[in-house]
Amino acid sequence: MLYDKARIFVAAGAGGDGSMSFRREAHVPRGGPDGGDGGHGGAVVLECDPALRDLQAFRRRQHFRARRGGHGGGALRHGANGEELVVRVPPGTQVTTDDGATHDLTRPGQRVRVARGGAGGRGNKHFATPTRQAPRFAELGLAGEERMLELRLKLLADVGLIGLPNAGKSSLLGRLTRAAPKIADYPFTTLEPVLGTLEGPDRQLIIADIPGLIEGASDGAGLGHDFLAHIERTGLLVHVLDLAPLDGSDPLANHATVERELALHDPALAARPRILALSKADLVTPAESARHVAQWRERLGSGTPVLLTSAATREGLDELGATLLHAVPLAAPEVFPETELPETELPEHVTFRPAEHRGFRIERDGDGPFRVVGAGIDRLVARHDLDNDEALGHIETRLRQIGVIRALEEKGFQSGDDVEIAGVVFGLDA
Image: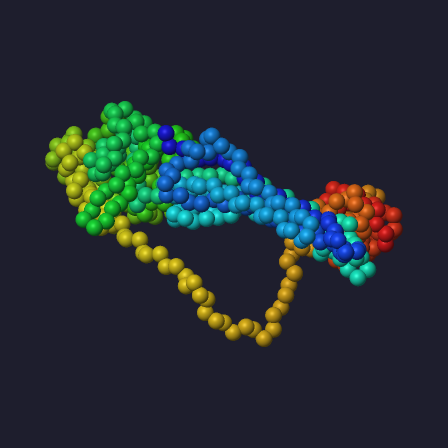
């Protein structure tokens, strides 16, 4: 069974804590601070692996956590960085993050970082100043990013066979290629997409047999969304139309049903180049076959080739194969950028604009505490041990330098008022 959907949880590693340490050496009185920094947490990366074919591995494991960074040590020893966690996915995987970002992994070796590791904390060596020569605090490491990912596999095929159930797609694929799909005389024989390779004189084509579409497939009927997704990447569609349906239905109505569902699912599919393959020609008379071909060519015009085929007698299969090899263009070779960037002349003036997410705002509901909201302010609090008096003093000093105290005073803040930052209530002096 082809597993083409998965939902996984990824968590990057947290950063290591900085060290609070002082030199302890013989004959060196009053050794200064020498706490080292913590290492950065490992990131989580998705990598396209051509050895994989579907998302079955994610049925057994849905949680992935990268290693955290090592803690800093004395003598300015830096903590080890957390090892990057690589999660391998098959070519054709579409990744959607919980914030709506989408990434397509189609080329072998292609990588995308989906969770950033937490930054390591700085040791107390960084906080020594002429007036604070023995800082007794260090920064804590920040947590790594955590998020849910939706994985969706969309087959990477050159040609997609579409049509109603039991239209003869599987038989056609089996005779055109070396694929061995399940074939039976009842609808919905094919329950998952099947790939086959068409061999040409100097190239190959990957052909996908898409399970039969029914009316309402674009709304999800009959697993329609699951099937339709696999033809979104194909460059050419072959609409396989049964000339002698077992249920006695009208081929014209059947053709309209499939085309309508394609257009409703994705308007781009309606404009995708296609070939009409009239299948099971061995079940009708030659005169009737010729009449059907003439009628369909008149309906569709010269832009859509109409071919008469029969998997039982191989009628028209050589012509169909040659048409496919001619209609699907060769992919242009990938151009990689040069390793050395050309020298560019620097502008005379450079304008620096602080990033928007580093700002903050002041909020207050009625007579409640003032709230300082901002990602940078939250990180400042998260980096320090709030049970350490020196660390609290450092936080207050930084808030003054950033301009938070001044902004609070403009909102009516007075000494002794409560201020909430990152869920923690502080008592600050104006």
